[in-house]
Image (cartoon, rainbow, N blue to C red; front, side, top):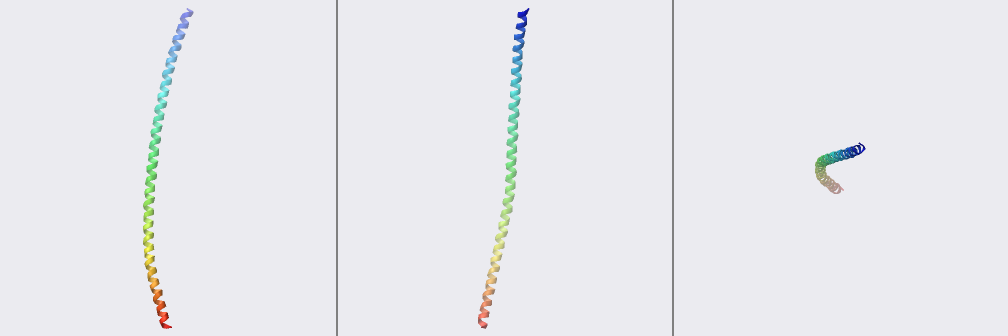
Amino acid sequence: MASFGIVCFRYTNWCLRGDIREKINDVDDRTTDGLQMMKEQLREYVWDTIGSSENKLAGKDNALESMVTTLKEDINELKGELKIFKAVVGNGMLTSKSKQ
């Protein structure tokens, strides 16, 4: 009878080891699947963030281009006014010299 108990114990122990291996493999598979899903989610998040940043930068680039264009127009307008003032001052000096 004692030997039967040892055989059953050994058989049960072997079965438990098989169940434990199966559970370990199951946990390992779930962990691998979970990590893969997290990796994909992180990849999507990074690409979304890059895309969002790219759109923001493009908007800022357009705003800067508009500001530069406006400043160039203002500079050209001021250059034109400066030419007029120089001409007026030059004519005024000619007039004052001829009166002397």
